[in-house]
Amino acid sequence: MRGRVSRPRKPQDPARWPEPCARCGEHRQPAAFWPDGRVCGYCYKQAQRTTGVCACGHEGVLPGRIDGAPACRGCSGIRLNLDCRSCGAEDELYNGTQCWSCVLAAKVDQVLTHPETGVMSLQLTPVAAALKSMKRANSGLTWFNQPHVAAFLSELALAPTISHESLDQLPASRTRDYVRGLLVEHDALPRRDELAARYRDWATQALTRVVDEHHREVIERYVRWHHQRRMNSMDRVTQGAFLRAKQSVTVAIELLNWLHARGIAIEQLAQAHLDTWQAEGPTTREIASRFLRWAINTRLVAPTLTMTPHRRGTSPTLSAAEQDSALQRVIAPDDLDPRERAAAILVLVFGQADRARRPPHLGRHHGDPRAGQRPPRRRRHRAAATARPALAAPAAAPSHDLTAAHPHSNWVFRGSSPGQHLRASTLRNRLRELFSTRAARLGSLHELTKLAPVAIIAEALGYHPATIERHAIGSAATYARYVAARADTPPTSR
Image (cartoon, rainbow, N blue to C red):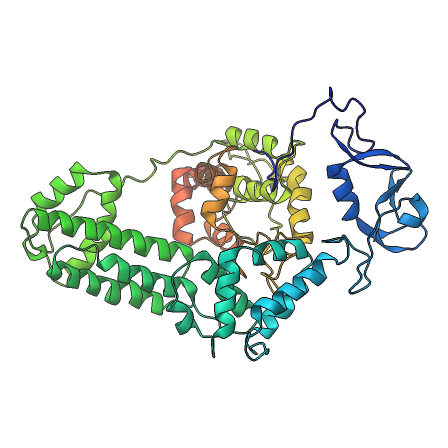
């Protein structure tokens, strides 16, 4: 998998531009002729955005090159307009007179100020200040210039008050969710459990898919007294709980609609009906067993009803050799994004998935006990040690830190939504070309259970002990420890 770029470069044309760019060496149309040679348009833009401290002590934009090092305009002799007429800062200019930050600030004031009173709402003031101070002002201006975004923000500026309830009344959209996130992250709105709120909205729409009115009442009770009650007892609804609740209700609705089409009420459900329904459809219909348990507990159906359970241990698993091979591909020199490389290492070495506040300091070891011998001394795996520098880079400069979306976030793998981490589904899609994240995670946990007790692995990696115990049984770690213990026990005399 290659690193992502916002806009692919056009192919080179050596026939039309035989003399290459002095900086990148590619054959493209020159944008300027500077003391170090002709410079293509891509390098010209890059030079305008290169900032730092020159060897002479000047701090600002360093468009020139002296002995391969960036240099200021004075030292390099480059004549380039980089002085903003509004703020006087030395920066890349948007329109030849103003820098991107000044143009963005004017746009923010224009959109978020009430057109009649000329005053900005106190709730929008902190968000406006954060948007104006964005390090990547061009991204903010691009977002504001989208017609649907400008229209939404203009309507928001007219609102007398802004609340979660008033936002909920607006049509659902990514813009609404993103703006809500900005308001929450900048303390303009109180923080709430967004997944719980999203589930309530989703469940309301899901009820409309139930054909029979009586069955609709059953699903409504299932949602309210099982899923929403469970969510209300949680400190914070996790992404996994949110997705499982949606999936359970979706499959339950499918089952009840199937029964209604055959003139069968839920109270008349028999084992033959369940067997036929499950056999006719995909394996995901087994998820209806969650609904069935609830229906049995609430005495809607007979307590003897059962469904064929999912067979555990059937998911593909990467072996230790396959994990090492995948890890070598990940850490090999390439243009793979550093954050994607670090995420891949977390999955392959530590069995982690989509989120990490900081790179873990856990090593990966190998060593299987053998009968009649002491187990080899555990040591850090060479590949894991080689991968450690790749884990440190994202912590130093997390993604999405140049916008207003993450003012207080300590996520290493930040998502595009304000204050939120990268979603597991997004990570799986990005790493799909390298390996299956599920198979890699299962394989890694299998290997780790051979090296340390279940309780230690569960606590270190944030898994439930029962989950790690299943992996230990699957990897035969329990038997291996028994063999090692027998090997270390001296024979007793009779």
